[in-house]
Length: 192
Image (cartoon, rainbow, N blue to C red; front, side):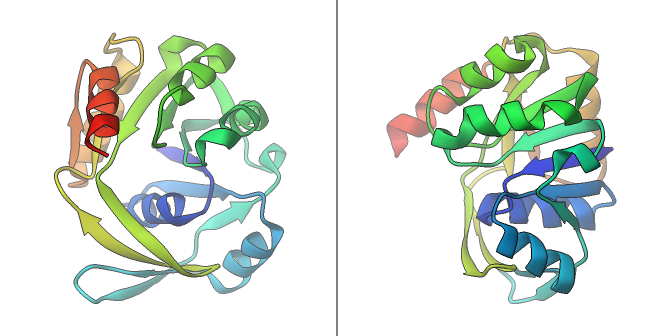
């Protein structure tokens, strides 16, 4: 599975490392040119909850035109950047591409659905977190529950979504599918 992650901040870097370390082809998309140059030159460092520190060479660019169509585009930007991020990501979104939002807050899925169509949109919630150490290093502190709770925005489980869940589980990523992601998002919002 070819994955593009829009936003190479804390969550984008965590997911980029996890997916890359589990055999997925990952490209990070980042607008901060200093971060792009640093990760491109020196790689991405992760500090894991068990104390291990790992180094990954993950492709990174600010130019989505160089990336091509992906199987999955993960949106990992702050909510106020959602519209710009998804509009800029359009060259990576093909006929069968899914778009997974791992953002906090309300309204992000609706913005993405307006841009790419609701049938492509998958919502994701995580109770895992981290903190930046430097522009190319993140400390992953872990979290409670599964790594990701994911579900189709429109509540309809399609073959592409089911395949994505199966691929994630095949490499032991702790993913919990749901048919009502909107309720899960609201519950997290109320708990915060």
